[in-house]
Amino acid sequence: MSEITSAPAVMAALVSALVTVLLFFIKGVCTPLWNKYFIVYKIKVEHSYEQKKKIKEAISKYKMPLLDSAESLNHRLWNFSGNCTKGWHNFKNNESIGDKYYLQTFCYRFLAFYAWCIKFERELIYLDVTLSEKNDLYFVKYIKTMQNIFCDASMLSGTGYDNEHAVDHFFKDDLISIVEKMITPTGVITYSEFKSKSESELDYTQVCKYISTIMSDKSCNKWHLINCFHFILMAFLSKYGYDYQRTGLFKLYKLRCSEPQNKLISNFERLVFNARLNKCREIKKAITILECKSNIANLCNSLKLIKEN
Image (cartoon, rainbow, N blue to C red):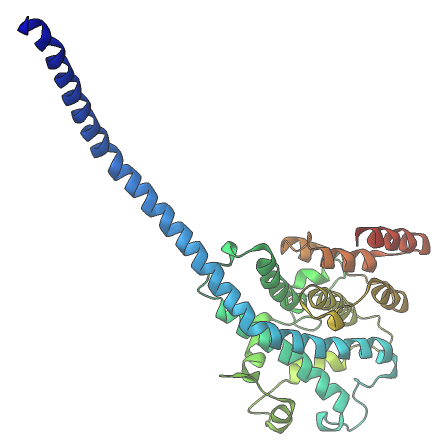
């Protein structure tokens, strides 16, 4: 009788022991694998979070000075669009830069904006911006693309331009070397400081020559580049600026109608595509309006943009 009753007990003990051994085996094999996976996953999540946080902090730090500088330059470009034919930016006989308030302030606003762009990019130099959120990544792309308009010779493809010489574009390193003299540990020099600096302290002759030689009839490559830059600058302000810094659809359309057809649109569109900015709504509107060639096309595109909004 004891043998009969003891058999199930022995079997239960064996099963229990087997299960215990099996559990220890599974735990011994799986725990290191799980810990390894979990630690790797945790590191990735924490790294991504820290990168996103630091990118947001950099944008927060430089967003206001960038927007203020962009707004100031935008005002000048609107003024320039309406008054280019008057030749205020062109040198006349025996004039020096000190006699040309309009030209000097134009150079300052251009260089100041570029300087803030450089400062912002240097803040990101050790950060992985590919991990940033969509809106933040667009912000970074705008800053880079706006600089490239004047330095990427592909913007002048198909015009017969000799890009071996910096006439209608800038060599990037040369422009950066000029801009670096605008930068201070706390920001960018003021216009008063800009005026007071000697040529040895701040030589911006190349930028001055570039702007002062834009033809008043708006037929040169430089004017077409300036025009492309103005439209992307307005797109940037419309996306990230205050409501009063944004440019409405009809104001964009009115500007386009008052200007000659831009011959660099296809190059500009390619530059925007390569920067992966082409899906951003504000830049899509800007390019659509720049591309308008006829009254019918203008009307159709305007109605399309209104519907999208």
